[in-house]
Length: 430
Image 1 (tube, helix red, strand yellow):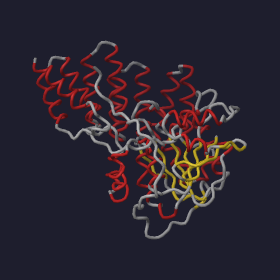
Image 2 (cartoon, rainbow, N blue to C red):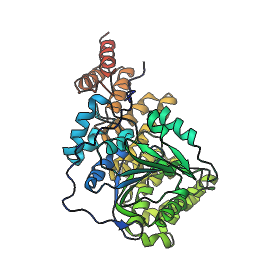
Image 3 (tube, rainbow, N blue to C red):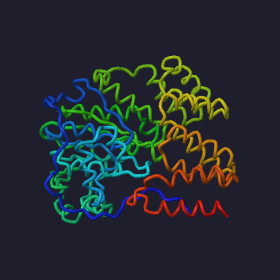
Image 4 (cartoon, one colour):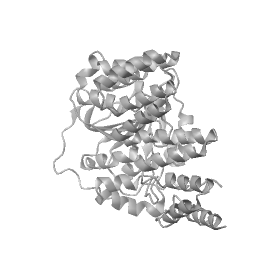
């Protein structure tokens, strides 16, 4: 049988009780600044859960959350864990909050897809404005489709769905006891009062067709220009990459640096692209036509200009792979990982390819490289144990499985893991 993956329990959505006591807010309220008129720091994380420590700092000011994401992250947290979650969100240090929302640890308290639900239940937010991606600008927003999506995915209950009404191009209603609006970016409603803007890379990924129809750098620039035109009074801007599950390719991870550069100095929005970004735009375009030599020249130019950028080293890996320079490609990938460990997600892709090609030794090697980059990732450790067993190295497999069995596995998110590990160890003893 396949090893257990983290599961989100089928939790009914209860009416929101009175908001829990919020985390200790900043001692002095923060004055909002105008988004993309005034520069500010982009607070980046891997998932939406990583944004929670930032959001809670402004709980006393009750901002609206302006969420640009393909997923509104409204999955309800399991009821038995809600007390522990609320306490963690109120009192735990930032690092502990992020760890509590990491599904690749053995005992998460919540999943990233629950993050907005949690912020609403904690009473941190005055309103939720969900800006969802539309790859086809002419696509009409259909109220019944949105209702079915929210209820079918357990993001809203029937009573909440019944509050939703379509006015023009915007849906309005109430979720978790607070006002909720949903619209495509072109019809973004103007929030009242201060806001927190969150941009998830899934929003860009879903809006992006290809580098010919919708080149991603101009696409992101256009998204930011539309937001700038709203003159939003912002307290913070957060950003999440979402590369962990492999659904968003690492080749667009550079967008974190690109967005950060524009949020920090908004005047850049109206200036020509700097050389390294123009080279990136050209490189992505040329990939459609398999222009390997021209791509290599552009990447060499980037390397001279920005040798310490992890995404440039990843570009070097990509070019070497195009030329089938295997050892050189892995060396460049290792350089990227040394600068930004999330590029080690590529080792998981390489491991999967090796497994499909019937190369178990290479699959194990790639998994171990990934495991070295993500020592807290229990599913990678489990896969290494399975590969060791398949290779006949029962001693190493037994040691790893025994270590995994000692971990405090969540009965909520990993209900079958202990049984799976017991069975795995029993087979190794035969």
